[in-house]
Amino acid sequence: MIALAFALIAFAAPVFWRHGYPFAALYIALLADVLCDPLKAVLYGFRKKTDQKISLLLSLLSMAAVLIYGTVNMERVVPSRHVYTSGKLKQSYTAVFISDLHIGSSQSEAVVEKAFNEIRELHPDFIMLGGDISDEQSENEEMKWTYAQFGKMGVPVYYIYGNHDRQPRSAYMYGPTYSRDELANMITDNGLIILQDELVKIGDDLYLLGREDTSEYTRKNVTEL
Image 1 (tube, rainbow, N blue to C red):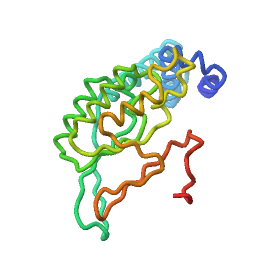
Image 2 (cartoon, rainbow, N blue to C red; image 1 turned 180 degrees about the vertical axis):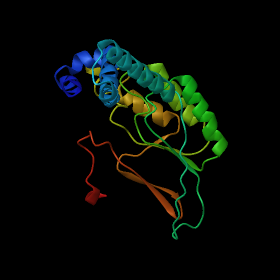
Image 3 (cartoon, one colour; image 1 turned 120 degrees about the horizontal axis):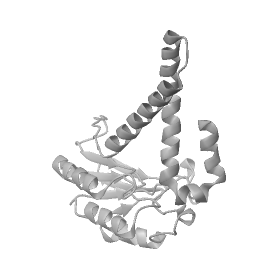
């Protein structure tokens, strides 16, 4: 049932994107019910019989657990710290990588603002934005606010497009809230550097390569780079 439900997205994309939240809740309920099946199997193995009321209760509890976990976890930004070494580096760098904020959709401004404060405390040498900072559900003002905040970081910020930033599926919803040019101008006007299959020199011993998104036909082949 869950496989069939997800397969239907391909045939009803306009409906799903325009009324996505009720459908998302339905898919979460189906997924939770599937995850609950092994627990039911163990329970029925001991009881040697099935009980519709217990089955329904377990499904509802599983759905509630998944929904609560998803809602709480969506608002928690937990940074991962990694140390990379190379004999070619002559100095150390502190870099911050961020992607998939989906401002206004997955993340609220309050959560993003808290993340910005944590980034400032790290005093990074540069910041990398890995795409999907905004998406088809981001409002124009939310998009502008987010890039304005990145522009105030006081360090170089390098940006690559994700598959949602330019709102390619907005036609399925209520139309784009900003144009591709508006997005690009907002990014560059705030001092961010867009990399589309381009190299930029960070220091005498470090280069950064930013790739165009795979959804764009203009994306270069690796051999061309």
